[in-house]
Figure 1 (cartoon, one colour):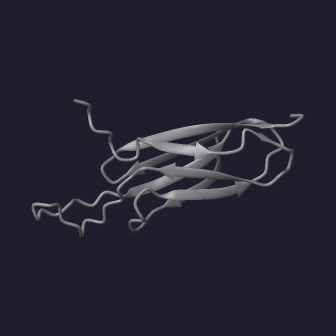
Figure 2: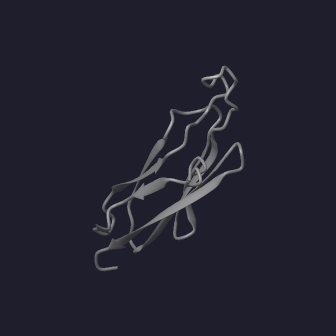
Length: 115
């Protein structure tokens, strides 16, 4: 029997592997997370505790590119898209934390042609 995955542990950061210098492109973060509001009940009628992602950051080479603070639950399995352009190759990293203290991160490398 496998151990259940904590919310938010399955995620992807999608970015092109190769870009032109200063070419604008999208970086997309996809997180599998139920984003429970606390208003739903399970099959036995018990309330499902609230647990949504509270903070999300996207960085490039340890410099903050985007930060979000979620005040109310978004749809389950949230997707965030950030547009940017680069002059140097490097790594994007996304980090998040939910109300139960679960944390997650994922990364993607992008190479700039000629850099």
